[in-house]
Image (cartoon, rainbow, N blue to C red):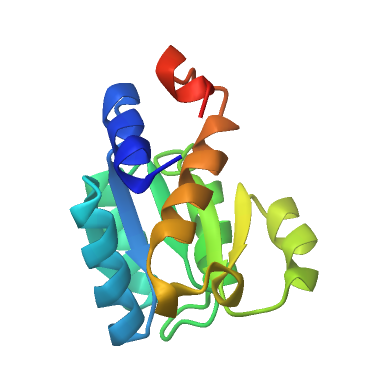
Length: 151
């Protein structure tokens, strides 16, 4: 699935709002730019406390959450999101440089999916991230348009 196709699919099913949480300014800006260009509505936070506030205010469809954050760690943010009825239904995708060995524990804590930054090769472009996002969203039991199923 191409980046433009995944963005079109997100718009069709109404999943356009993404909260990107990462303390790395460079990675946050580069990822925000790529997601915005692909057609997503993106808001960002650089620490855990700001992420919780934005999640409650903006009600994003998806949260891309780094684990190593200032003010409040990613695991603490995840637990707070899942314990709050106002944010419990938001799909949280752990987006981190930590190894895959943490994935099972994080999914037990409520993470919907786990994306390892190094595996996405973000320094080579955003195509892998956009494709991974589209694949994850498909597993949310939302229907893809017929034209997208053949790709």
